[in-house]
Structures are given as C-alpha cells and as structure tokens.
Length: 38
Image 1: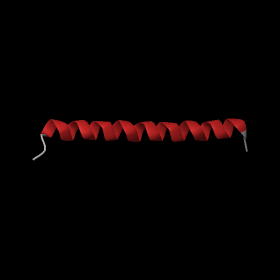
Image 2: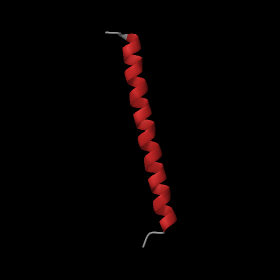
Image 3: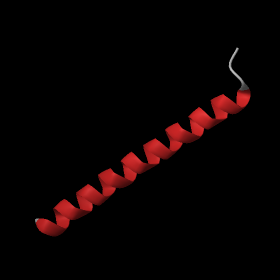
Image 4: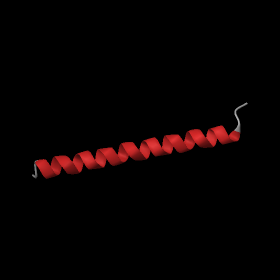
C-alpha cells in the first residue's frame, strides 16, 4: 500500500511538470510569433 502523502507528492510533481511544459510551449509560440510575425 502506498502512503497517501507520497501520492500527493507525486501529483504535485506531475502538476508542476505539466505547468512547466505548458508555459514553455506558450513562450515558444510567443517567441516564434515575435521572430516571424505573420
């Protein structure tokens, strides 16, 4: 059986990772638009 606090920690890490990936994607899109405005 997995301790509940370990599950919470894993969820936190996953949420942080997803947020970081989303932020990187947004920044990349903004950079591309800035470098090559359509």
